[in-house]
Image (cartoon, rainbow, N blue to C red; front, side, top):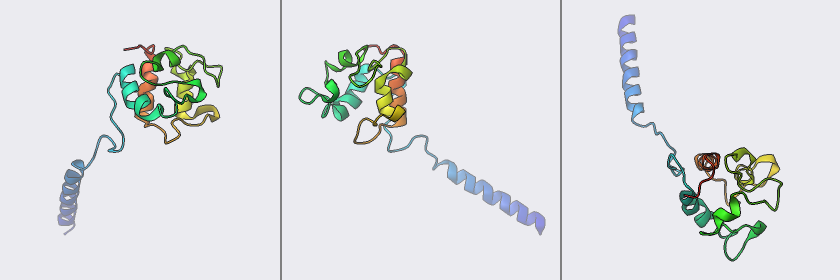
Length: 137
């Protein structure tokens, strides 16, 4: 009887594990997937234009920052911050870029955007773009 019970439990475990594997997801449905190599154009189209320009655009430039298309790159890369001794984006050094401090809410900085923090994957992709030298592509 004990052998029969063990065999039955083993078969039940196999069936359960087989059914579970189809339900495992590799990404969260709520997070937007980012390309492996994020470009400035991607960041402009997916972050700055839809999320940031309402406060940092042609009309309203909070913190003296205009992130509208055509202006964002020059206002970020190697540009002095009005709120910190760090540059807004220090090419090759995401850890020393004020933009990353704001996106991550580091050192007591208010998280940007105020409507809700960007996904971790997107923040990491922006950091990778900066670490690659923040190319204008």
